[in-house]
Amino acid sequence: MYEVEIPRDSHTARERRTATVEVRFGQVHILRPQNLRSLDSLSVSLAVTVISAREINAPEGVEAVNWQLITNLAVEDFETARRYITWYSRRWLIEMFHYTLKSGCAVEKLQSDTTERLRKLIEIYSIIALRIMIITYLVRTQPDISCETFLSTTEWKVLYCSVKHSKSPPSKPPTAYEACIMIARLGGFAGFKSSGFPGVKVIWWGLAKLTTILHSLPFIQNFVG
Image (tube, rainbow, N blue to C red; front, side, top):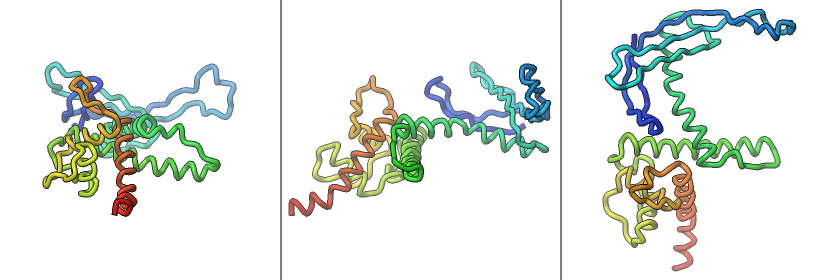
């Protein structure tokens, strides 16, 4: 048995918690389907490992964790099985990364004349998606920390003045939550009580607009003297 972190899921209203799971594993052989018997290139059977992670003593009113994992990786001891369960427990972060990359950054709409240039574009957008994920994760888990955790001093000051239409920023940096809302507002977020928490799209648009403003500052300063 060991403890595994269950992440928060806003879609199912599941709160983040730690679950104690009982771990079992063993190897099984999956036979080749009958309708593919004529394909000699396929093995008669495929050896895989089944890992079971079943929660014990789940909190009252909470659905117990019951993961049944199938892998072609070798599992010879408990530590290896635990490592693979830990990998699986982080699949939400991987799914969120792909969602942010596709939905927030619209990476699927990227076009280029060569594969190499497209690969570099995806790498750049992956960095952007990761930054968006870091912001949203910190805001949801530690909303009251300083926004300087993910914004530089110049960035949050320009962000504040742009959103608040102010000529001078405050001496103290906003909280992570306050900065996230301001970024979203730059991206078109209305900010009504019924609006809920801003999504990755408006945060992406807000960061893009903030970057444009930051890049424009030297020109504006020279232009106005």
